[in-house]
Image (cartoon, rainbow, N blue to C red; front, side, top):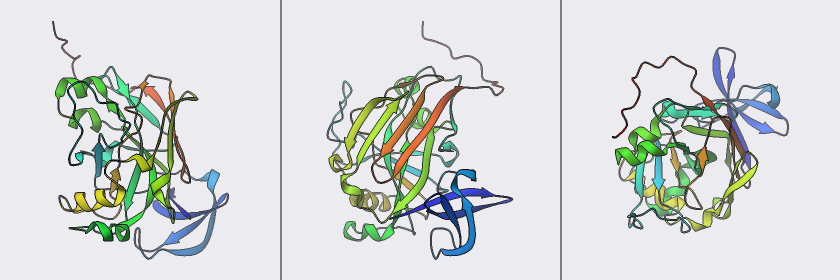
Length: 267
């Protein structure tokens, strides 16, 4: 098992491999042909970034057998997909912003697949060759906007609505991992990756027949135990996946200038 991190290193962004409490800096093409250098950093001293830089995050809805369907929803016969923009990414330990346009945030614990090389029309049996590793994701959602819009684009796409990290783990069997979420220390979700309706290799293959997956792109595989719970300002949400680690972020109020007028509520 290997753990890869991405971090600010002066004026450049570097990758490293975690060795205990230290990080060995890597050189080479992104995600491939990495070579270790003699440069070593203390892990605690680094400003960790999201562990990869995807062109897109392809996300899967309603993908756990224990999902509690909302009124009117049906079980999917094919993966239900949506895309989150790369600008929604935020690193482990950074803040999730509650923007003025929304009044109701939810969080969703998810395993993220990290693509290691260009994937186009990939057969399911070969999908594992295209996976670099796995990390932890939080699919933050403006639940009120999701319901009012009917479509999911706006509710999923705000800046900071995709916490990711803290690192990418390779060399593990991902098919029987435990995934758990906590809100202010209290367990809210618990599931097992083995309960996915559409499995890891199938998702890579299916999505690669729709859009070419590029190195660093991620696939969010869905959330267990129904849906995540409400996230309020001041709350701390932690997502833990066995053999990978823990992703931790706190929700904060927007402090930036906001020029949009208040929402017009239905009469």
